[in-house]
Amino acid sequence: MVWTLALAFRFFQEEAASAPPPAAANSSAIAEMIHNSGPVAFTVLLLLLLASIFSWTIMLSKWSSFKKAQAQGQRFVRAFRKSSRLSEVAAVADQFRPSPLVAVFNEIHDEYQRQNGGRGLPRNPVALERAAQTASSEALTSMESRMTWLATIAAIAPFIGLFGTVWGIIDAFHGLGTAGAATLRAVAPGISEALITTAAGLVVAIPAVVGYNQLTARLREFGSRMDDFGRELLNAIENAAMLTPTQPTQPPTATYAPAEEPPRRRAF
Image (cartoon, rainbow, N blue to C red; front, side, top):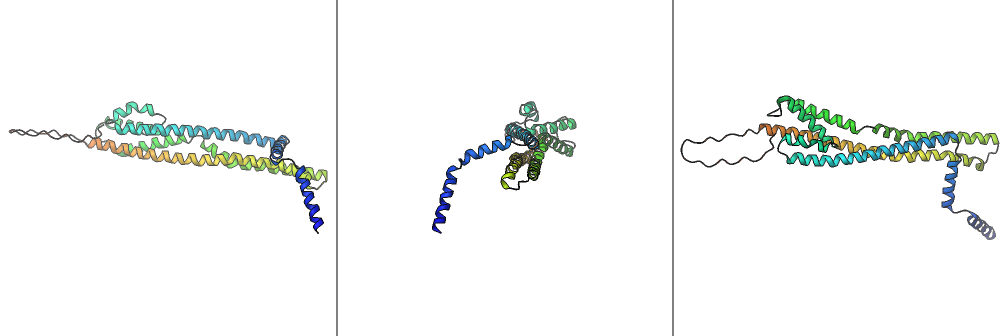
């Protein structure tokens, strides 16, 4: 028994010494499997590569545009809250154009001008609210462009890779049946080459899913900010229109103390 264990241990030592380094073997094996892929597997890998490039292009462009929109939106809100007149804000609104808040402001401002020339209480406040909702919906629709492509790539990339794997396994077993050698050594290379496409599909789909979820959350945040800004602008218009300064009346006799200056409020 002891001699048997000693011989087995020596055999395993010789096998481990003759085996190549695992890192080099894995990298060379993957490169060899990709190089030896059949026409269907190669087409699947090429299609997944193009889908990955397209999805990363969408994600990077959206993140860049959303970052600019957020920065310009914060600057526009600060300029709006510091200004005391609607005309002053309208004059500088184009400087913050990447922000969707500018579209909401312009739509409400145009509707307010159409109703009563931008003075006094609006004759139809509901129309102002509808204008704000329309501008917000149009801005979100523009920001959501090409997002459906990202969702589509995230959904179908694993199935494209699985198709390449199934086709490769079918080809491997067909070759096994033709050769007539029913051994694992004969079928393993074909199956391993087929599984490369499934791994490639997952590599393409996982970043697309994460990017789509993150961008969708940012879009919901932009929608909430536009709704809040629209309500803030409507409240500012109504408060400014209701501010009617009264002229102080002088009594006929005696002196009078000067009237206190009313607190400064937003006037449009």
